[in-house]
Length: 139
Image 1 (cartoon, rainbow, N blue to C red):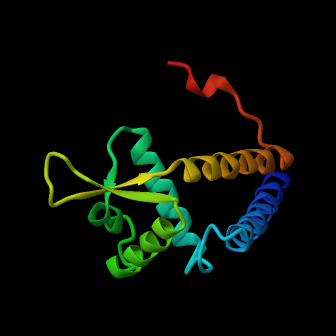
Image 2: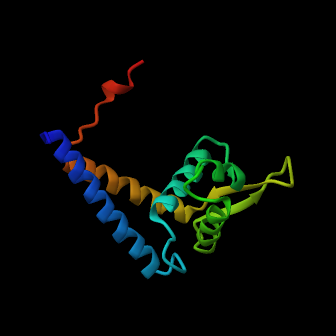
Image 3: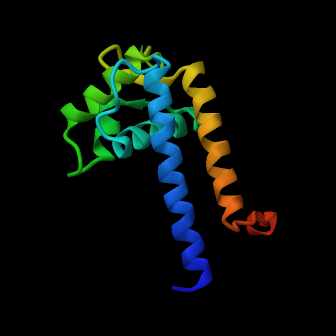
């Protein structure tokens, strides 16, 4: 394994450790009524809901479930969303154009936690040698 591969592995391990501690904090602080069923699934849901909101196109529960393919059933995704809604992390909002659809929207609480989450991820990446270059974004 070369130095870059070792750094990448160290970064992954540090990130897993931070995420585990972060989940314990959410549970201990009463933000989540019970520990998350699967950290992987929960992280995916948080990311997808936030990403769609940033694009200005909130995601529906049905759309969200399609991201999981064979790794989680729609019922499992729904239970995750129920937990997140009870914790004040997402809201279900009625689609004003189609009252049969409900959008999943991040709350301010999730925005704050998401910021903390991303800052920790960037810190861990930097600590393990990641260097951001704006040259990657030139047209």
